Image 1 (cartoon, rainbow, N blue to C red):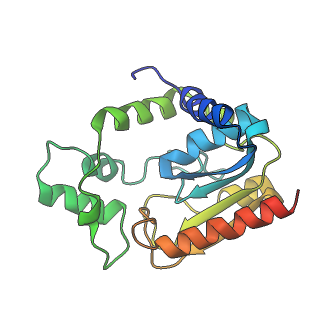
Image 2: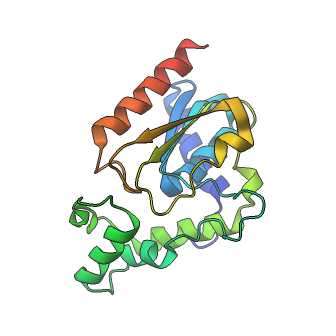
Length: 200
């Protein structure tokens, strides 16, 4: 898995969609997952009707920014899944990077696979951001932002891509979003999908 790029990850999804022959879909990518989701939309627009970026960094920053894309709380993001660290340290990383105040980060202690995490990071590094940033040039995008997301720089996509992008805020959620506000997240996705399919 060492030299996979985002096109490789997207092609795996495309292979499943081709096999299932379900027609164009609304694809949801949470956090890093928005990158292969957007890559799929760019590489195989025939398979994608819309893209949901859930608690997802854009990959670019506004002109004049001194930050590096994907750099916020990098040590905490990596530390959350570092199985060599103590549980208290991992909980601290999870709390700081992923969860809104008052939410229990212990629900995310399990399920981390360091080899997958490393492969995902490497794929992001070796794939030019312009290959995926805009999710191609036609599909609508829901930028589903978490109210307390400490990782994502908000409000990048709409100023850069205009009316293709709808922004919605999930209240009382951090970067994890799904375990914090599953109903609000799923309702926003379902509403967006209905609009996308009705617009055809």
